[in-house]
Every structure is written in structure tokens, then in C-alpha cells.
Length: 200
Image (tube, rainbow, N blue to C red; front, top):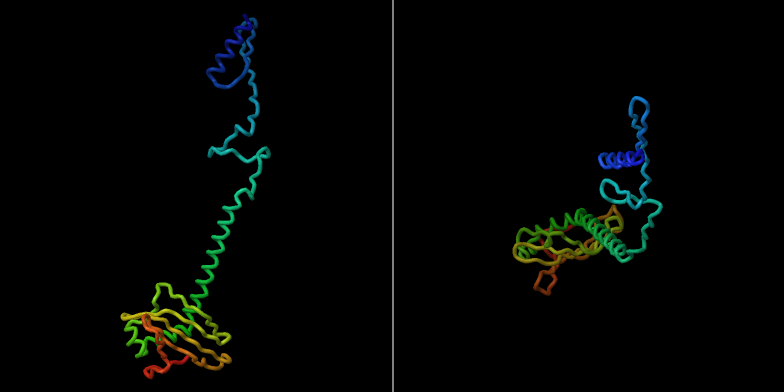
């Protein structure tokens, strides 16, 4: 009877409270003493532990990821990074050419040239939204060999500039300043234009 009462109380308390413990019932002379002894639950294995986000934490029992498993994807990321860096570098170099005093002076004289305005029209500027200056423009070493597309309200073409100088104390010697208009095979020598005195 004592054993059945203990088992009944244990199952009842476990059902109501949701955690295991044992109950010991003794009957002294005047009152009923109820003694509870909690049973510690066993430690859960790592496979059953989950964080608040629902992901299992990394433990020593887990196999470390292999960094060489996805070689193809890593190569694609690396190539994309190299291409992006190359485009950025070319963009920086091209911006330096465009913002140089040589290009500013050349475009200024081109807009004032009567021959250029007759061929291209008014409002002469760079032909492309992002102008690309091809060739070498090194004012330190005194070498200018560039070409860039220009346009007006009538036509567009390719402007070519070649110049050099022996030192910084000397002015540039203009070797070629010409304009190749789209649709025409003839190269127009802008140095022969008497409406401007081109100098760098």
C-alpha cells in the first residue's frame, strides 16, 4: 500500500508539474510529512541543443568545413574581384587624363577653332557619356600621344593630339593636332587653323 501510494503521487506530480522528482511519504505519530527529492535531468547531447535562432552551435564533435570544397565558386568570386579592381584602376587613370591641364587646354582651343565648328558644329564636347582618353598622357616625362572622341550639334569625330617637351621648363612642341570626322576619310590638320593659336 505504501509503494502504490508513492507511485501514484509521483505520477500525479510529474504529470502536473512537468519535471521528474520522487516523493517519499512517511506517517509519524501526528502528521503526514511529504518529502520531495528532485532528480537532475541528464545533460542533453550536442545534437539536441539549439540556439535561439534555431541553428546548432559549432562544437568539437562537428566536422570542420572544407575550404577547398567549392573551388569553382571561389574562382568565380576571385575573377570578379580582379575584374572590378582592373576597371576601377582604368577609371582612375582615365579620370586623371581628363582632368589634366593638357586636356582642358586642348578642348578649350577646339571649341574656339573655326574649322572644328564648321565640321562638328557648335557646343563641342566629349562624344561619350564617360569619355575614354586613349594613349599616353604623361606631363612629367613630357609625352602626350592621345586620342578622344568629340562631338558637336552637327557631327562627331576623333581628335588626335601628339606633343612632347624636353623638360618642365620648356613648352610642349605640338607634333600633331588633327580631327577625323565620322564619315570622312580625310584627316583635318587643326594646326593650320589661323583662328586659334594652339599652345600647351
